[in-house]
Amino acid sequence: MSDTSLKSGGWHDWLITNEPGSRRQARLGQLYRQWLALRRNPAAMAGLFIVLGLLLVAAFAPLVAPYDPLVQSLGERLRPPSSANWFGTDALGRDIFSRVVYGTRVTLVIVLLVVITVGPIGLLIGCAAGYLGGWVDTVLMRITDVFLAFPRLVLALAFVAALGPGLENAVIAIAFTAWPPYARVARAETLVIRKADYISAVRLQGASQWRIVWRHVVPMCMPSLIVRTTFDMAGIILTAAGLGFLGLGAQPPIPEWGAMISAGREQIFDQWWVATFPGLAICVVALGFNLLGDGLRDVMDAR
Image (cartoon, rainbow, N blue to C red; front, side, top):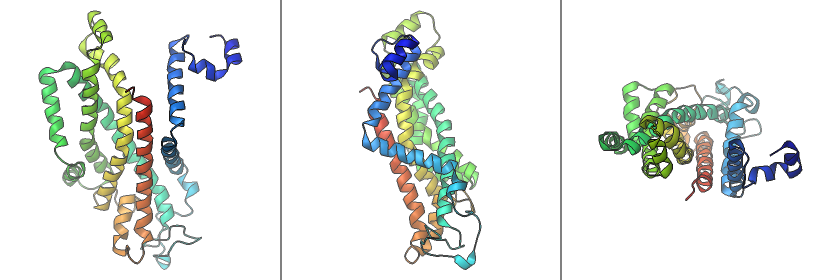
């Protein structure tokens, strides 16, 4: 389509046309249609708003937080919520609102490190098992079943106990326990895709098995993987918070939400705000990822 017709018809008409003039226009049109469908889902937009808010708060934490999250002031310990301290103060006099704000950075670091680790691993294992079949499928899926046999938090606790407490080890432990569902989803998609006519055509052209898996099977599995990843982020956050609550995740004085709840559990009846606001932060963020994942599933799943 020429620039003149693009200007006269507008971007909307150019993107939703049923006769795209290029592969780039077709891909952009598909993304635009998905965005329009997502925008019509109020729950998904609420989830997107929460996730974007989390990203903005993490990016501009020094501007949002009124105090240093690590500075102690024993003379102001366990102050209730007020205009000076919106969420009150903890047992060491630190501003809870500032610590919750900076805790978004810790949460995002854990989520991103786990996702970029387990996503490719689970995708490749699942696609290889589904496409190659035979003994490869048997071996890979039995290994996957071993990991799925244990609850995620229990298995993560075992890994952290072996590696030692700390943020890095917590990320490794969560990553070791989070990849099996991705492999299962990718395998299920691959079992359907490998019977498609275009896969047979590529195979007749002489393409190797690994080229078919990497260039033709993996891209078709990406939508389901993205939806699964969005849903799984809530579970990753809860697992990280659970490790932090038990003292096996991020170590003090790092402002991590699970560790903050653990520090306030002894004052839960008298100074309820110490544990309540970090818990609400976990609840809201987990809800946001679940709502967004539900909307993405409706948009990206062709069925």
